[in-house]
Length: 522
Image (cartoon, rainbow, N blue to C red; front, side, top):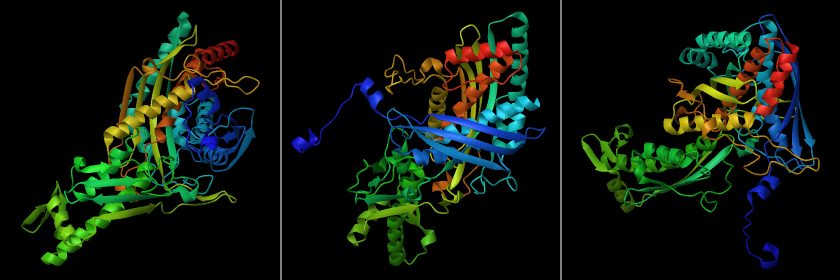
């Protein structure tokens, strides 16, 4: 139709057609051999990651690369060989989704740490703490980047206290022992898992952004930038940044829809970089205009630039002041440009893919979560009783938005690992192509008790926008703690005899199979 009529055509698919045709997150099959000492500290790792691409590679190269980058998660691997493989299938082409391969790599790490802990007879938390990256040594990744600014020991220590981890561990162990002794129906599990997620596009050229700022003579401001608002609060943060630089209320800032005829050559709003890139570009544009206004006042009044303050819609110096609107009206009459572009590119990043060495990430975002679950051993059904999350967002630009991202990311990650099962036929056609068969988390799946907190006094040591840290993708991986807690419950239900095999998503059916297998070997 588009070719015949030489016009744009809108194609509106049914939900079933949309799910059948569009790409999904890459499924992975991971294999690993790991050596460790009596304390559970990893000595060597040989890992094979197999990404299932579908009928075409799409973004598979970069996705499998990032899975390999995150096979370590938060843990130092002194000797590691990590190989990634990409496999064609007779299914729709798989593509990028929140985490971009990172969650698939981290899953290998977290299962590995749980299994090591059971092998050496220690609580998984202690083994995780033994393997964390150090701050001065034991801080080099398998791809030769030095890990800095990652305060996971502090995060875990604070979360252990706020979540009452050790008392709950003792209570859950006693509860499960009573259940086994009395032939009870329900068992519980507990797990604490950390997250260390690299921030930057691994394709270097994408780490750039532009912005355009106009100031009008009534004192209002219009901002355009290269980021896409998809409900994550990006436009609000960009507006806050420009308002802060110009000393204006947020109501004076209009953030307009992204358009490539205003800001060209935009990078995708992905890799958790939306605020980092576009916020800096918008800030640079606002600062350019602000400097022009300051230079004008310095020239006219013979004052020092440091004396001039922009705050609450007023511009003050010495014992004089005027409104921001009066200042820009005066600047317009003096033929001072009130419009500017801004540009930003991420510094310090480089990576040699052939040598598998470099600094692909500007910094790391990190956090930790504790999840407690309860399983019905008769049916495999389970519920999440309590979740505690402590996440490092640096100097938060908007704490409410950041907490919302953490809550939503956790629920999404939990759904990926528990309910969202995709089933294909032998012919490569998707069978779970609607809401009746593909189950996303609902309100009833929300943890009964859900505590989310931001790490305090932890500004980003890198020169990010206001020393904040990205919060888009990293919270997704907090969902891994639910899966680890399910394995913990199954392990205890089976008499602590064997590491449970629990593939993802951990549907009630798979949980029941794992319970039965654990019981048969106990």
